[in-house]
Length: 343
Image (cartoon, rainbow, N blue to C red; front, top):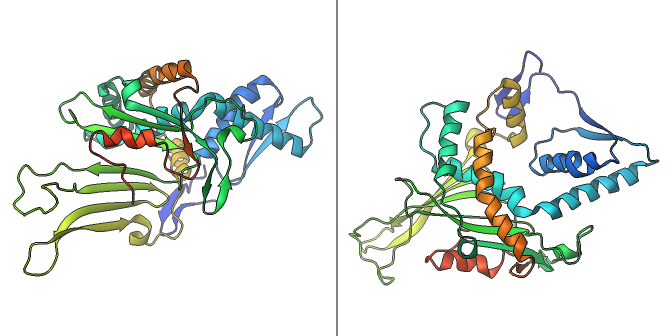
């Protein structure tokens, strides 16, 4: 990196000097290593927006491939890898569990890579083993519709076996065995072909032990909610109850909304990979998973995958593409008197 490095500005993260285009060259791109490891890894980075722009992939092979043949092979490699991976290994094992750690960890003594990751791994160590049959729902999307566009089923996608049992949706109930979070459920879900792409953490606060205001809806009280949105916009929304003007006591939910880009006048917010690459070049490790955290994450996910792979497609819940998942996911939270948060 040039000495000028990177700096923050009102338009986002701006390099001091324009970076050179990034090119990855794979020698023997027609071989097994490229098909099973290299290309799927690049595909995963691309899905996570961790590849720089502009980015190019150059393949060298003994076979007489033209550009179109090469592109078709790359797409096939990536799709084949997802069908053998599924949403649990692809999303739950890393992204969702890392978000859970950020929400549930104790405040670190200082903001550095060691102390921050020490606290995050404690969260995973406290998670109770998942009761797969009771607290886990896996699904796969079938044909559906979104915005007046027909969407085909996962098994009808290119390079997907017609009898594929690969899950494209996962919902889990997790519990932590520690003093702060005992008897507090954490519900996580992720999926493909949902109505929109969003990443949110919603925290429901417990009601007060005693209500001094009269409640008309059978004594039930709505929770105050704090929502952190990471995608598509970075914002924080606080939902709580306020008294309407007037002599009568009438309460209704209101919201306070903080938008990061609007508040600070950022017209082009930096993407996640910009910060990630910048931290990597600076040697900052706060955003990178440590080996013990990865081990703990896989120890939670492996029993889930072992059970479902043994079941095959028998207990896989189907849901229409363009919806928020199978009905079993709604029942997962409904049995505790809750619903998935939507805004």
